Length: 219
Ligand code: 13P
Image (cartoon, rainbow, N blue to C red; front, side, top):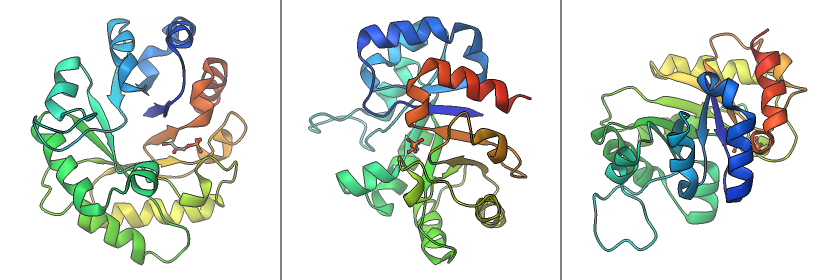
């Protein structure tokens, strides 16, 4: 599973070019565009997720999108608890937990983002336990080490392997890795065992880079 997190990038013209450029790769990717352009991708037959939703069904929440609205739009996935949501917009594990429950209730598949900064698993354990409190359905977990997001730095492969193994020992979730993935390091990253896919940020904005990544990943 390869998820492409555009974050707050691409204009409408760029989105249209991107849709055209990746049309032969649609089956291999799940695009997480800015919500404004989700429909463009959906109408062109892409699998789409939103980058965020709010947990309430409707009401006085200026600027927010409800899980049902996302579902009705045709989104199949939603990213919840991304590090940028936590660090810039103040989301905590409790809010993430509410969002997960609300998304699942509205038939969205959840990609829960977690991440830490070191080998100690305490922080990660707390994040996973609190975010998944009373959640019965399975979710996908994206492990994104904080220091690897947008920095060009990736951890040692064995360190990622240990985290993937650890997360799998706690949950029955599929696990993705995210953080500074590009066409050069995907070769190494794909050697991680029991990893179910990737969550790609910056490199996903460039359709040609995505094609290169997909070609290496599928070898
Ligand atoms: P980068 O690939 O830009 O490091 O971003 C990772 C990420 O946050 C994906 O959700």
